[in-house]
Image (cartoon, rainbow, N blue to C red; front, side, top):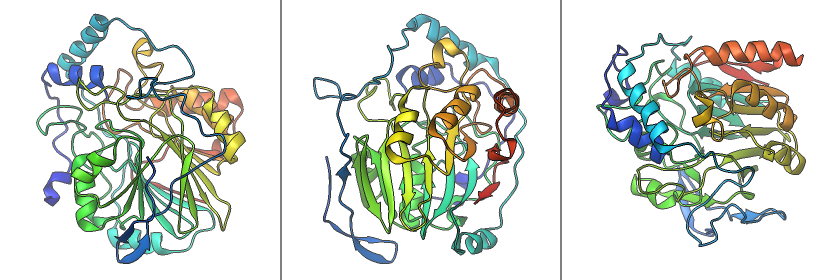
Length: 378
């Protein structure tokens, strides 16, 4: 993988082929244990996937193939209406300026992430990608370091706000967690490059192991909702999300989508990673069962139009409600400001979060929408 493939492309106005966004949006987006593996330079036994006492499979399709959301009826929009919206977006040719961002010095980031931390230290790389230290572990969420969120390199949603540094410049993670298989969250080039640089442990929802392995990953564990593993004193629980999956017109909901709850045993620090989700009651369930997180990373972008997005993408206001349902201490907005994926302006989430914080009487010092490359530590 050449370094050039991770550099930001020209962000001028471009006319996208009409079929590509339609294909992407209309179609999208077993326990293993005991194997010996080399993770980075360390030999260890892959952790055992275990299930919490309340584990169930209500979200599995009855015929044994694929998955479904369980909290509310599906959003039944007309296919032709959706196709019309998608075709309209393809020919609109909108152009946005990047949101606030800064470049990171690789040596300084390496030094910073090696320092001990009281609870957590997180750097937002843009969209849903974040590099975090919790306990003695480095964790990378939904690594997406490519110039487009697309199955092809010449069309599809293009990165608007540049990366703070290249993927080969970040401190290599011990664990990579994946929320689902949409192109803006599961990126082949990023997985291939990570696996070339260092073989981390990949934690993925059910159905994604074979795909991630086909891109060069050597150590992959699949988890269902409410299953968990423990790695170096950190517990990773696969938790529910309300979303969908697909990478083509022919595989809708064949693989699972998820959020993740992470807990360091030593410090008791808890972090929630929302990935990509609509709003439902499971946020309260997570808090009740696993405890309220010190940090909740919650998506706040790509929510318009509501007739199309309401089931699968929270609004900024719903994101803050999820934060309150979780009883979290700190809020970090993700899934915004990087790609033009929906009808709202790129900076609208920032404005709506600020307004809703005031309306809800929340402490603004606990609510964070960082610049790309920005960090938060507690």
